Amino acid sequence: MNDTREFLLDLQAEITRIEQFSAEGETAFFADERTQYAIMMAYARIGEIAKRLPQAILDTRPEAEWRDIKGFRDVLLHRYDEINPRRVWQAVQKVPVLRAAVEALLVSLPPNEDEASDS
Image 1 (cartoon, rainbow, N blue to C red):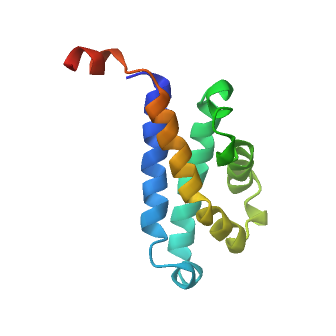
Image 2: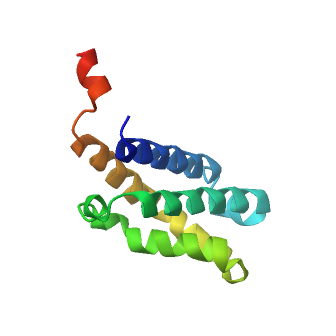
Image 3: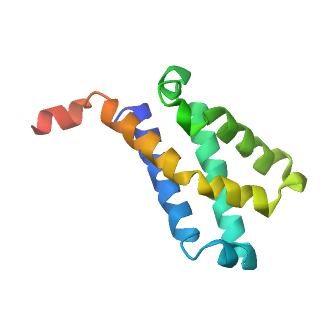
């Protein structure tokens, strides 16, 4: 599996985690520090993965706001004292756009050699 495809699949997995962790809604999110922490970890991983993807690929899906995602990762990991749960919840609200962008990127990739030989 090529790195780009693998990274995009990893992004999908982290997005799914955020969707699951936030499924009970805003009130539950603000009431549960563990849920907040889990979502922050998933977003930190998303930001790290985004940093590893080629910029040319990210540029094809600007609606995902990759620069903001990478910057949010930096805040989560290096400026943790500035983290505001409201900001984290705002990021959760952008997950559907991020999921759509990742899915579009996956569809746009040429099939990898393993998949081509299975046909």
